[in-house]
Length: 357
Image (tube, rainbow, N blue to C red; front, side):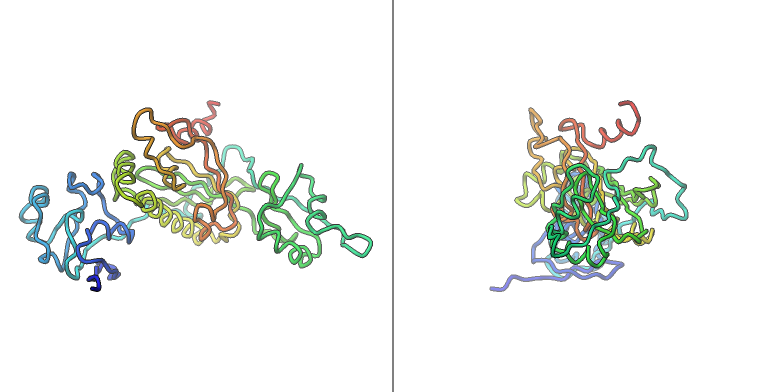
């Protein structure tokens, strides 16, 4: 027998999705990245996941929990707790679009400069001799030997695949984009469009993203948004609890953050007229639980004695490894080191930026 499916229409956007018959409305809202507060993680304790049902509320009578946490007038007006309500027919749910805080573009942003700039990413010019029958050195070796960086290398397979075409189109002269000693891109010598970086703070309640010019150190734009994981619990303990009780709990929380990050970075690039392909360096900080979830690592051991995280050290990844290639396809991603289960990289970054050490 075919499983019954019903429409869920979000108001005022009129966006329509589907839900299985009997599916909890809060799960639908989470899956579709709709803004909703669920301080208790959907356990029916806080009464914060309240929604207004414009249609369909009569198909599932109020539960005892709803009768306890909502007034009679609220229930009569169509208000329900999304963690209690089951979708038993087509429903129309009134929600508010997530409001992005401090959407600041370059013209209105006071000029902010990084106190000291020594970026991991830099440009190095090169000029290569052209091969001939008497000089059959490979394209790779020809480029590597021309760079002054100590022990340079190319690790990105896509760049290696395109290397013969790139250096010939540039007539053997250009700029290598270096991340430490690794060549991560090659630009035409005449290209002056700049190199950029992104700094991300994944807070328990708010996600903040900064776009920086890696040459000048200027912060070009800032954008922030509520952390969508709030619909799974207000604090880290409730979110850890959610990951432990759901088979794909970590994946759900991770997907929620990635959706928001991709949108924020896209908005920054559009506002500042910066090509996302020119973002080469991304640094991410957050408390230890937020970082574990971002990387798809279970934070279960953080919640109970002796409170042991999977890792606390700094890590470097490619954007595709974190499923962020949509917004920062060319970027390396640096996860800053934390200290312990409850002293994360956000604290480390604050200490370093203060100049105390």
